[in-house]
Image (cartoon, one colour):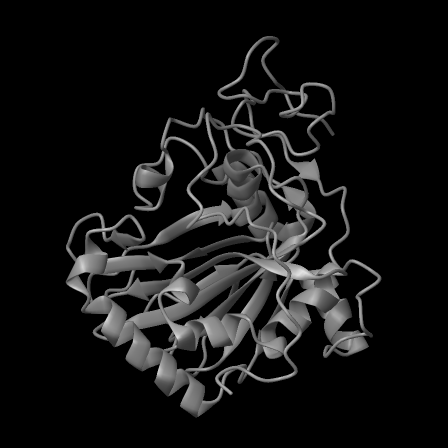
Length: 326
């Protein structure tokens, strides 16, 4: 299956042949004229994890390979959640921080939507995201040493928390950050209870095996608009593609107590509804990328996004032999 592309030019330094101009882009997006789904050409579970098999069982690896995600009832302890929650309150009350680009407000209110690069703002979050309990799983799945591509806290305020539309993170990271292959994964860790009615994460199982292109050129400094998640000209998954995959595979909703988590492949189609309930929803979001999959020139954007959104320093996370918060 191939994608329809314009015969000349592109929205950025890339084009039908990718940013190098000579190697075909296996996941064309943004510069295409229609969204034609592309079968994934890379593994989901990568072999050769260094230092042993890793913490996941064979059946868990098989489930992740099949569905594109794996849920955990308690990835963090009660004490670790409490420490993270205290840091969230501290960060949220920092007026100086609110004036920086790391903090994204809701499009229709002054409530915080997301805070990026939280591992650089808090030793507590740094300990969690660099721990073997999390990074060890990522090493096993990605089959290499890993580094931190992104960290953030997603707030979803009571009554007014806005939605996150259907999208593939890899589509953004490929087109705007220059990530070559879908060899990255995310962990969404509940720091408050995630309920059916306060905007929990939804994933289409099996969607990680199909790349759904987005039609529409990437504007300059697009991250300033796209992070608001409203009326987006590019980056959202094609609705026909989402519908077809949802009809084929269904939709899974993830709820759970504080400390629970879901790990999912970077190409999974996922979304979350707005929160009109009186109960806020706050999650820690951590992205690990393989050190063998460093970012390059964006495939479909004028320039790379800032480092607090897409880390370009490929520094392997050290093996610490300890759990988060210890």
